[in-house]
Length: 198
Ligand SMILES: Cc1cc2nc3c(=O)[nH]c(=O)nc-3n(C[C@H](O)[C@H](O)[C@H](O)COP(=O)(O)O)c2cc1C
Image (cartoon, rainbow, N blue to C red; front, side, top):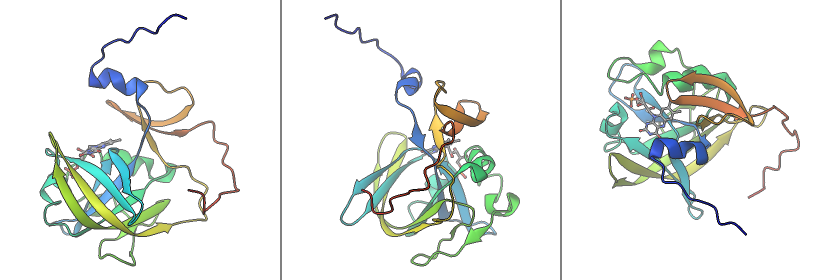
């Protein structure tokens, strides 16, 4: 049997083979009139079952970087296609220029376990308490304990994905620069959702 030839690629080229990533909207307390900033994130993971914990990576060039030291709580919102414009804008615009919640006229929903609100039109809002902050290269990994998975179980939307240049098998919804937001396509959403599945 022929052995495959492994080619050395740079990080950007590797994206084509390492896609997709899930898209999240991180909401953090912020010194702007609305009281909160929103940042689009695709570096995310679960990092514990008991207690349930999740982690995201925040770039040191973002204004959110300046917020994560003092933040005690935050929300990770799960956007579907209804929030595709917002997800792109919050991934390009910075709090240094605009108060995103006010200018993009975002509809918020009160959280039950934290003082940070979620997004009314999201598929889900995950409420977290900050646990650890780990400095990496040009990012910091922010780890939070999940206090509540608040899910809009009536929606049939699929979660947005961030994909690379290989778009086969996806519905590409929006592209700006290197950023492509998509859902798995063609849309064939099962209504038989198992809420207890692992
Ligand atoms: C699809 C997508 C995914 C992104 N993922 C991340 C991420 O995981 N971490 C990060 O720090 N920035 C990420 N960004 C970039 C930030 O969202 C962007 O720099 C934003 O303007 C920062 O806003 P802020 O300055 O208000 O914090 C992403 C952008 C897009 C469009």
